[in-house]
Length: 131
Picture (cartoon, rainbow, N blue to C red):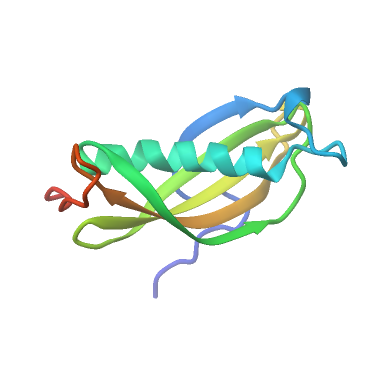
């Protein structure tokens, strides 16, 4: 029987880490969800481009859930893994975790599933190379 992942541990490869800053707050004083989403998209794009050996484009955000707020001064850590592959596209599972007050107290704050497609120089879908 396969083991379930530990819900207290990130799943995937640590792809991006950044410090949250006051310029990224919303009107409630927390980090704006759109900023977090953009960090997740950048991290997923890094993994997708490496797998595609070239250009990729985000074509869908299949699922997204904000679990906890992100605060100024948190270290945002984005973990990514390829969950599925098609002929030209791939689905990436993305988790955002924070280190509160730059300490070891890690909390999962957001997760989602993004779809990317490999594209050629003209922006047209192209097959993924062999794994």
